[in-house]
Image 1 (cartoon, rainbow, N blue to C red):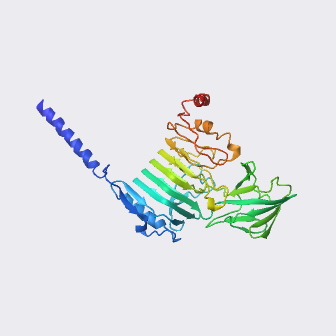
Image 2 (tube, rainbow, N blue to C red):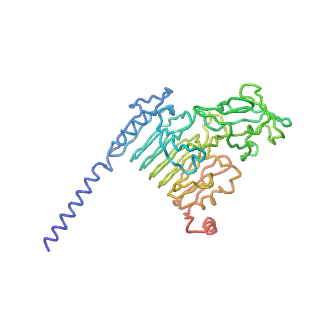
Image 3 (cartoon, helix red, strand yellow):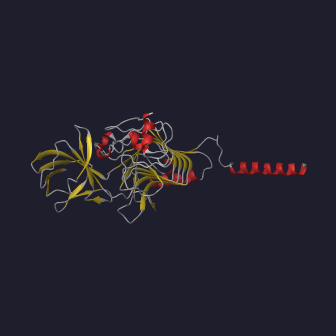
Length: 400
C-alpha cells in the first residue's frame, strides 16, 4: 500500500513539475515588455514607409515570453504596397471576380499572443489597395487608440450642381482622381483604376441613401467644363436633384479592411477604420471578438460623405450568397461604436433586432447601433442560436 502511495505521489510531483516548466515562459503577473515603434526606424510625420518597422516590431514581439505592448508615438504614418506582405488568403465573399487570391497586407500579425498595439491617437495612411491588417492564428491581441484611412479610397464621389433636361453638371470631390478618355471616366488611384463599379445616391434633405445605376456609365456624352467639373448628358432625365451626392466604388472585392483568421480574444478598442475596401472587418474561424469604440465614419477633415460601412463576418469561411448579410458563428461583443447606416434598400433586412436574430449566438448584453446617419447603442440582451430557435421564437424573445 505504501509503495502504491509513493508511486502516485511521485507521479503527481512529476505532473506538477511538468506544468511549472510548461508555464515558466509565460508569467501572468510580470510587467509587460514595452516596445517602441521608433526603435525600429519609424518616424512620425515623415511620409516614409513604416511597413518594415512594423514587421520588425512584430517579429520582436513574437520572441517575448510574456505580455508585450507596442507603443506607437503619436503622429501620422504611411503604409505602401511595395513592402507590404503578400500572401494567399481565401476570404469569405472576396475575390469573387479575380482568380488571384493574393492579398496585399499592411500590418501582418501571424501567430502572435499577448500583444497590445497602442497607437496613442496616431493616424496611419494606406497607399494603394490593401488589407489594412490581418491577424492569423493570434490570441489575446488588442489594437487600440489608432486610426486608419486611405490616401485615395476606392470610392469616388460626385455632387449634383445643376440639372437641365437630360444634362447634369457634377462637382467631382477633390480626392476622387480620374481621367477622361474617349467619352469615358476612369477613376484612378495608387496602383489601381476602375471604369465601372456600383453606385448609390444620397439625398441630404431626406437623409436617405439608396442603390442606383452608375451615373457615369450610363452617360451619352461627358464634357469637362473645368477642374473636377463634369457635364454629363443622358438619353433621358437622370431623375436626380441639385445637392444629391453619388458615391461610386470599385466593385472588385480583392481586399478587405481587416481579416481575423483562426484567432481568439481579439479586442479592437477606440479604433478608427475611416475607410475599408471590400467587406470591411471579416472574421473567419475566430472567437471572442470585442469591438469597443470603433469609429467607421469618415474623418471630418476628409470632406467626404461616406467611405464604407462595417461588415463584420465571423463566418466559417464559406462564401455566403448575400454580401450585406452579417453571419455570426463565434462569440462577439460590441461596445459603444459609431457606424454609417447600410444602404437603405437593405434597411428592413438589417433592422437591429431582426438582423441579429438571424445570426448565431451572441454574448448577453451584445449591442449594435444602427440609425439614419450615425448612432450609438441598441441593446440586445438575448442570445438566439439560429439552428435552435425559429424566427418567430426569436421575435418573441425580443419583445420579452
